[in-house]
Amino acid sequence: MPSILQCIDCGQQFPIDTVIYACSSCQGLLDVKHDFGQSRTRLGSELFDGRLGSLTAPFNSGVWRFKELIYPGIEDDQIVSRMEGNTNLYQAPRVAKYAGVDTLYLKHEGENPTGSFKDRGMTTGVTQARILGMKRVACASTGNTSASMASYAAHAGMQGIIFLQDQEIALGKLAQGIAFGATCLQISADFDRNLELVRQAGDRLGIYLLNSINPFRLEGQKSIMFEALQQLRWRAPDWIIVPGGNLGNSSAFGKGLLEMHDLGLIDRLPRMAIIQAEGANPLYRHFAGGFKHFQPVKAETIASAIKIGNPVNLQKAIRTIEWTNGVVEEVSDQEIMDAKAIVDGVGIGCEPASACSVAGARKLAARGVIKPGDTVVGILTGHALKDPEATVGYHADSLSDISPAFQNAMLKADDDLDEIVNLLGLHQAKV
Ligand SMILES: *Cc1c(COP(=O)(O)O)cnc(C)c1O
Ligand SMILES: [Zn+2]
Image (tube, rainbow, N blue to C red; front, side):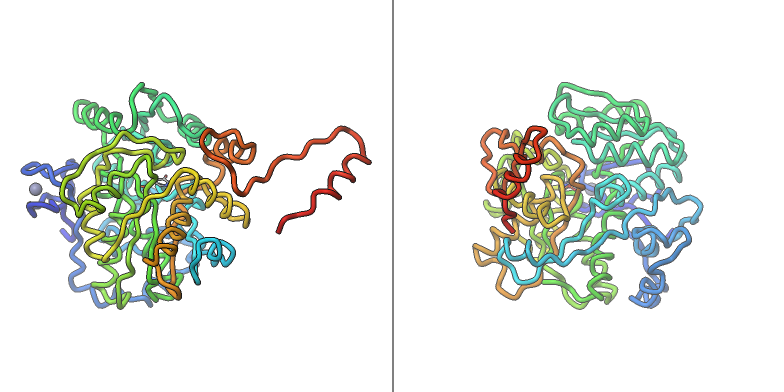
C-alpha cells in the first residue's frame, strides 16, 4: 500500500481504507501519508509541467495533474472530478497598492466549478467515498462545503446530506445545495454545533463525513499550493496569505508546502499568514498567547465562511505555523468589506471571507511584518456571487456597523433624457 492514515499526535497508523476521522487511541487528527518511494526522482517539475493544458482525465484537473502527490496508486476511473482547479493567478498592482505591498498575486479559488476552493477537497473526498463504496455523504457547512459536496455527490450518483444553520447562510450557497439535489437540513444551531451533530449522526447511520476533519479533503486542497507554485515557475514567494475558519485550508497548505520542499520542487518554504475575522478569532488569540491555552469563541462576523469558533483542524494549523515560521492576524468586518470592495473594484471580485487575504496583507505590511520588496500570494477562497446580500448591502450603506469607504452608490433617474445626461455629467468616474 503506498498510502496510510497516521495520527499526528501519537503516530498510530491505520490502513488507508479505514473509515475513521480521528485516532482511535488518542482522538488526534489524522494525516494521509504517501510513500513516494522509488517514484521520488520522477516527481519533478518536468512531470507536472508536461501535463499543463492536458485535455484528458485525470490530468485535465488542477488537482489530479499532481496525482502522484495527491493519491498515488488509485485507478483513474475511480476518480470523481469536475476538472476543478486550474484557477488563475492574477497579478494585481492596484490591490497591491491598497495593501501596501510591492508584489501581490491573487490566486482565485472562486473560479472552481462551484465557486470555492472546497471543490479541490471534494474531488478527493468523494473519490475516497466511492473507493469505500459509500452511498451517502454528509457535511455541516456555513455554505460552500455543502454547495461543493452537493455537486460532487450528484456527479458521483450519491446522496448528499447537508446540515445548515437556520440563519445567515449566504443565498448563493444555499441555492446551490438545493439545486444540486442534496438533502438539506436546516438546524437551529451554529456551525460548530452542527459539526458535532453531523459527526454523531453519521456514526450512527454509517454516512461518510466530508468536513475538513476528513483528511482526504486536505489532500486535494494541497494542490492550491502546488498549482500556485507551478504558476510562479516553482519560485517560492515570501508569503502565502489565507483566511482561516475551520483551518482545513491552512493545514493543507502547510502539508503541501512541506512535501514540495521535501521533493525539491521548491528550495525554500514561504511563510504562511492565516487571517481571521475579529469576531471569529480563536486561532489568533491562541497564537497571541503563545499557544498555551486554547479557548473556543462564540463566532460572529459578516464573513460567514469563516464564522467558526472552534476550528477542528487547530492542531494541524499550529503545525503549519511552526513549519513555515508563520503568523496569525485578525481583521475587522469593516476592514474585510473595504478590502473586498477593492478586489471587486478592479474587476476580480470575491466573497467577504476571501477579502481577509487582502485586509490581512495590508495590516501585516503596516505592522512591518511583511517587508517592502516581499512577494505575496493571497488566496481568494470564494466567488463574488456567493454572497450578493453582503455586496449590495455594503454599497447601499445598509450594513450595521459598517460604513463603506469605497461605496459605489446606485444612481436613480426618472424616464427623462435631460435628467440622465445631467446626472452622468455631474457624476465623473473616481478612478
Ligand atoms: C471554507 C472557506 C473558508 C475557510 O477555510 P477553512 O479551511 O475552513 O479555514 C474561507 N473562505 C471561503 C470562501 C470558504 O468557503
Ligand atoms: Zn493518536
